[in-house]
Image: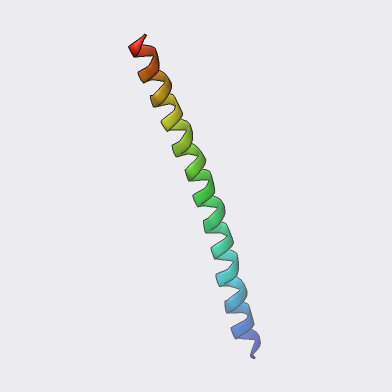
Length: 46
């Protein structure tokens, strides 16, 4: 395998790992927002 092909594969793997981290962070943000909405709805019911 040529060094260009190895470099391209490594670059795609790095981008894939970066995307997973970004998606994980977005998931935490969405979860926190959902909990805030739930808490507000529960407070309004009381």
